[in-house]
Length: 253
Ligand SMILES: Nc1ncnc2c1ncn2[C@@H]1O[C@H](COP(=O)(O)OP(=O)(O)OP(=O)(O)O)[C@@H](O)[C@H]1O
Ligand SMILES: [Mg+2]
Image (cartoon, rainbow, N blue to C red; front, side, top):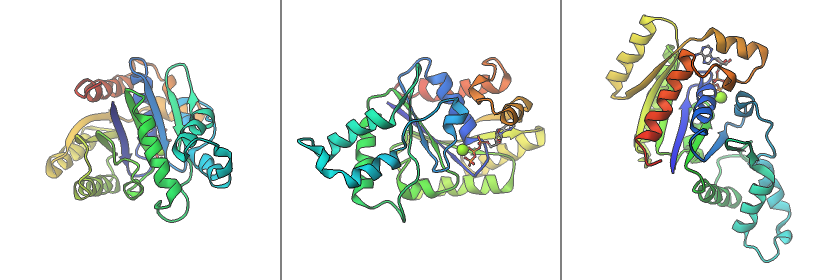
């Protein structure tokens, strides 16, 4: 199994890139798409109507312990996730996490949920996680099992400084990932490309790909069209496809 977590500052293109990675990888692999952003919009980018969120399942879980019968909590929860939360499409399954409960997530239900989620992920060849902006997912443990962390940045100073903090945090926390990569997005010109290349050099981050600014993506956004309907042979799509091949090709998938 290969797990890819897409991180970065707000609005840098995490969801667009996640959606296109899912689009390409699901043609070849058994894939689970995870929307770990409480302000969920991966389903829109994929053009899929999601079922219940994991958060909603957990709420049910807290009020219906009697319902479990002979199953232990883990088995019951796993069944519930499959029957109510996993959205199946022809090409992949989608799971939307929804809102986390209160402060942190140290309560029993949440740790149970994480355990079940980890088990569930093992049923797939590839898991792609679209995370929420910033650094919150580190404290939630959302990406603790990821093999590859993609840090998406645009040319902005803020995008780069978030990227730097993600890199620092991921080494401080000694996460067990194989590699962390930088991905430049919405690059408008050579100067922008240079800024990101220089940053990657200085921070010792491997630059996986530079993705251009795309009028098509802007148009799709305005028209409310899912980004996965982009032409597979557009420059943008081909570059994301290259990322997909690189990550899963040199992984164990
Ligand atoms: N390469 C690009 N060219 C043009 N527009 C882009 C590009 N990448 C992303 N966008 C636009 O930027 C906006 C943010 O993209 P996206 O939702 O993927 O970012 P995000 O990092 O997931 O944001 P959030 O942190 O809010 O989840 C969207 O309106 C999207 O259409
Ligand atoms: Mg997003």
